[in-house]
Length: 382
Ligand SMILES: [Ca+2]
Ligand SMILES: [Ca+2]
Image 1: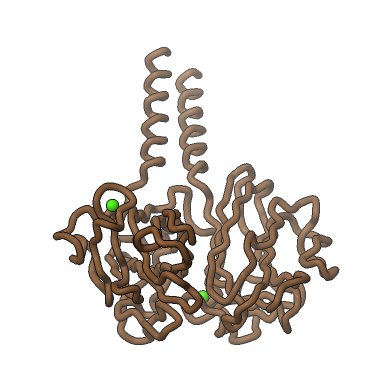
Image 2: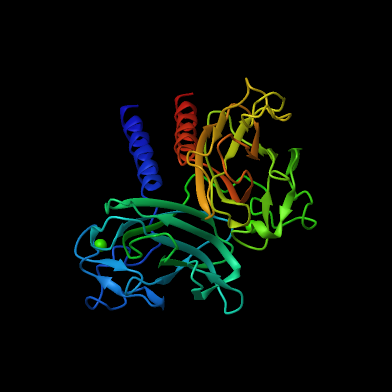
């Protein structure tokens, strides 16, 4: 008995170790293998105007990537082996060049290559020569820390092909002051917990502008699918209508007690400058939660059943930003709602949403593995 306990203990440890150290798909992720300053780091290819390996851009060890040259937009990419339908978690560290203070931006792209419909990297008219908007599965812009320190940025995507390009760019955005960045320690790992449980999270399946996107139901005052709201693909969601509060929801199949990561990308309508707010609700079907501070309430969620009720942690502005939340499911069905929230003091009061995902956290794998081991152990004892 003692031996078998030891055996199952070791097996559990092995399962947990495998889960905790999912392989990084990125080759030369720390840019340490290169031929010196200003060269392409091994496994990375210049898209346009990239400086390359830089010994002044290291967060760890000796080298980092300086993705744009001469304080201009530019960057590098590499091809990752992926499994269609699987979700991936990405991370990288960014800093202003020379630790300078002020604002800079880094753009992250993932998707398939193509020469038509190029994707904009900055707001100055620079386009990638590698990524095609039709095959794009991730597009996000991140601000560096304005005090010049390194900060960790994370992103997610669901692969659509057996190979996925990932591109990292310095993006010269109007209003920035530094326009020059370093990048180091890139990782992309398969999400151990499982696949995205949101249906039509990219809103690509719909009947045209102003219609219900497939799988999404209007709660109240929702415009619906909108071709002007795409971060990736051709469509997004305009959750409210006429600059007013409103939104949509769908039902997810969940496992009670399991934690889920919610991610969505949000931007002001028409890329307008100024502030807006998004509210994300997760919970049971019923009515009565306030969406804004104007007296508008959902008819689709119950106050007592809400396991998540949050305004965006920061106000939305004219650029796409990723908003992330976490919740623990309490039932086998969980509603997810996304709303434009008209808050007093905001300027724009209208948002677009795209790329909504809900992914079970890796803990699920541990629990399933451990409960399977528990079952095995009970059978051996019987
Ligand atoms: Ca490094
Ligand atoms: Ca989309």
